[in-house]
Length: 307
Ligand code: ADP
Image (cartoon, rainbow, N blue to C red; front, top):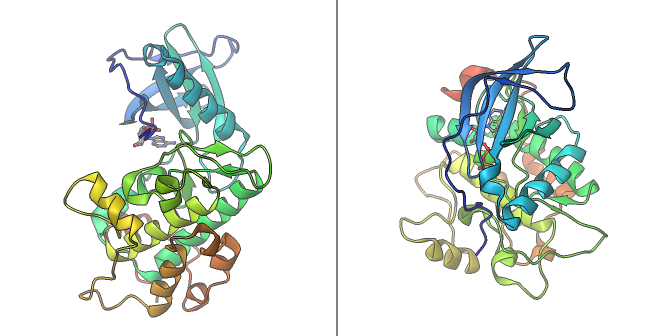
């Protein structure tokens, strides 16, 4: 199965300290700290001449010798650069030199929801409403643009300086050419992947696959671990997904029945029966209690108090 992790020729080459786009001689980016390393390359903090701090994703051309990797990067760039939404990582520019391809992105200072989830274990329902509403808005926008993300997971949900969600990593995204088109490529991340992506090669998949992942995300934020997680191998996760085998842990008693009902309606095996983004937005879970307008950075470590 193609999980989209591009078989990298691991390479230790570092990009220059001063990165200059060849076609824009008046621009330059001073490389600062390493933000992280991914399947495709490295991401650094950079400073513009005006003192603005951005993120730059650097892909070594050595890893693009095979056509498949090259096509994937081109597709990621083509899709991401067209998107412009407050809850999607901004794509500012891309350029290349002899050795690297560079993607200039909005910097997300507060890491990802995966990091937050690890620190906090479980978020409160007001926080879950806050993050889910931002995610749903971004997903609604992507659907209007005919884009399926196909790898929505906590590690791809970045957090800005003011703790707003920014969806990132469009490496597995698909751009539909026409309404009703279905995709057939198997891709995603085991814990979050929708059943029809894995098992329905006849009918393929579409936007509903992102809704499934949203269900997994909401469950994970509230209960601390993904619903289909096993200690065993990946195929055991796939079996649990196929059989819709998940439960709400009985020792966690403070999650509302409305939250559980909503998760149940996102994790439905048949994609056509799953809630749509609009139906999720109208669900009673979102009117059940308060939704904070802002969340403090301290929420990365300790539950905020909303009284
Ligand atoms: P992959 O696509 O394999 O996940 P990326 O190159 O997109 O890898 O990202 C690698 C790491 O760099 C991420 O896990 C994250 O820690 C960091 N990162 C990526 N994009 C940003 C960003 N816009 N702002 C801050 N950190 C980022």
